[in-house]
Every structure is written in C-alpha cells, then in structure tokens.
Length: 85
Image (cartoon, one colour):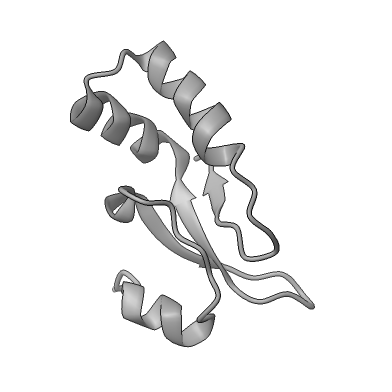
C-alpha cells in the first residue's frame, strides 16, 4: 500500500520546492523530470473543490481563480505543478 508523502519529506527532497498556500489537502506527491529538482504535485480538481468549499466560490469562479491566481503565479523553477486526473 502506498503512503502519502508528507510536507517534511517534500522539504527533504527539495528544500526550495514551492507550495500553494491553503491546498495541502490536494497534494498528490512529488513529480520528477530528468535534470530538475522534484516539484510538489497537486490534484487540480481537489484544489477547485477546496476553493468552492472554503471560499464559497461557484465552480466557474473557482476555475477562474485557480487559472489566474494559482497556476498563473509562476515563481521560478520550483513552482508546483497541478495535475488533471
């Protein structure tokens, strides 16, 4: 059985990995690509659901917010990724 990676383990693998504030419950794990440091990977749909539940957004509002304010907030090579399952 697979266990979920912890924030501490993420920090051990890449201390410079950025995280999206308020979306810890949507962390899937880490993703790797040859020649780069591991990045935090989030479940896109879980992020949308967090915005809807936590902030009272409609689905459309949550998607707009996610696209512009979260995914659009590129902060360099350690920016997290968002996976659409």
